[in-house]
Length: 365
Image (cartoon, rainbow, N blue to C red; front, side, top):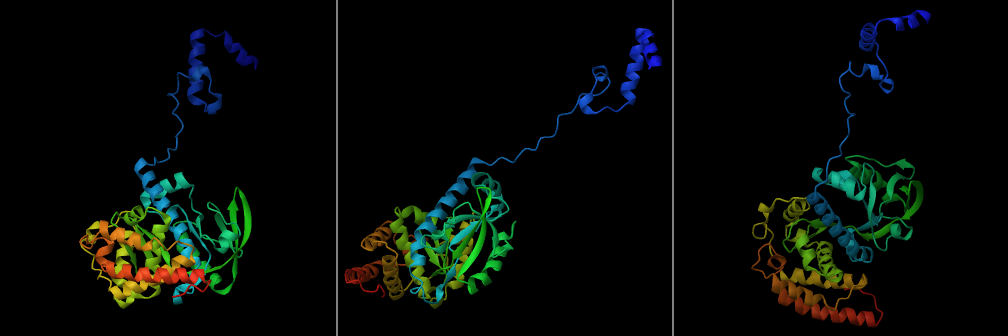
């Protein structure tokens, strides 16, 4: 120590030279950098910053619109599905009564928007609960995250929806209820969810502005254009019930149209469908008036059983045919051309439904 102190007596130029040498040969912790060394090192580099990808306004608007339309479809379809399993004939089964998605449920371009706007991540999250279902009765909520089913961890990641369906299907088929563990407000909650007997039709949104609706025997698809035309939920219920009735009566199969219509649905449920396939009626043959009237009959009973007012149904279909006549080849009336015949049948069926309601008789065709 005395030897080092003695060096302080050296000439100032020699002291500076020695300090510079120490700064070049000794590695100092960054937090302990000495002022005497600042001239001997290059300027410090800023720490790397992780920049989250920006979600464009267009992607946000697309996803918000998509979720809004899907929410409306699911809300309006709920009473129709839950209250008509016997009228859906062989197309009814036990359902959990909710929809769940994660960020990978949407196309790659909307993954970031799904995460930013709705908090979706790798884990499946409840997006909708079927009105009147067992899930609704026990308090399953939107935004609940699915953790376990009957003590088994539910899948996460890009294939979570498909893997969860494969895991839950055997459970739904063998038990009256499913024990679910969900993450809610940072804590796990266990719910015993009773299964709900309902029509087993998936309800899809068609991302196109043409005013139409399709069914392929197992799915119902309503286009965005039809949803915008159906200004009230009651009017949307008329369309949903009509397509459900076609499915229940097997009309797509009878017309040998299941594959054709199925292809249309597969295309239109995409975020950006191939619109070149929508020329004319897209290969869909017009529905014969007898089949259309049979679907109208069944749909009116489905509507009444679900609590919807059937009095204004005929007026809605007449308005649709007037604004989008059969000459609009990619519209609803082009593939359901027998409007006058349908309206005459509806007038009679509405009277029958009202009479049965007044007499408290079973609402069955």
